[in-house]
Length: 396
Image (cartoon, rainbow, N blue to C red):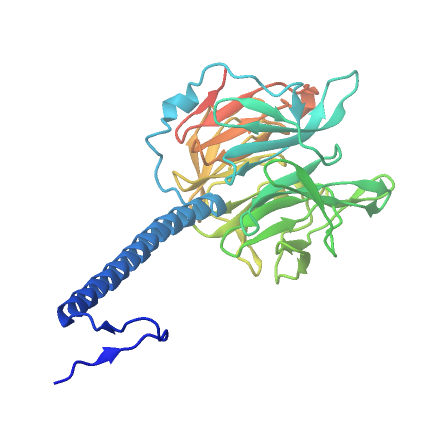
């Protein structure tokens, strides 16, 4: 049998015989092993990448949930002892003292944010546009590149857009209101320009976690010498304001306390200043917003009649706190159907025109810049109060 030969293209070169079959077989097995090794390496890389992605995605999801929903934590965390917060060492206070500031918790940056207020820096009281932050142990003044004007207003955290929203009251002339809206991104303020804007001063505002929108109620429209109170309801969807037309509404009022009750997934409104004749009854009313309409609750237990009380939801105890009456230092809680007095005494003793918020990082309620009894004409004082779930503590 003749051996098959391969001939070179070059006629001057001698032909080379085919390599032995054993060498070809070894080379084939080597190539097969190389291909299998590369395939296993690729599979290993894909598996490790998938595991790493899942771990990262889980961390991101947890971080986003904690940031967008301040009321997810069911129990007080061991790494932030109550005693550490309640018995904190002396901390610098916001200076100069101020009253009627706007305050809310920013869960994305883990600080309580305070804006503006009325100070006694000069001979006459002045409005300020300073921004301060509370980290659970002390206050620090922030210096953003841009700031809102020195106006009074109200502030909440918009979890849907993950930013703080500041609604400022501005009266251009008698009967004309030109309010402003600003957002806080953790570093600076940016003005917003929605197509529609509620026109009112002294309105109440809260974020509705169940429906992912901000709810604004009431306030008044100034005229030449008086203020006409209104009872309109507006909602903010992150882009624009929309007026709502509920079947029932609280009567016109301003200065009502309002917060979101996560345990019952509803917004609670308490008190406020009425039109005069019904002021006392208005100041003791409790109303619930369910996303469609308002409903008045007349359960047993009426805490007090006051237009400047404070409502804050405590995520750990899952209770809504009511405190800050001018003539009482008691603390009440809402159980979904009625008010129950938690403590007879011990709440901030100079609560008039104070600012309050729930500090989710420290899991405590914080109150700042109480002014005192308005009838006595008291000037603002630098006070920081902490509610640890059981008692109030005045910070040194």
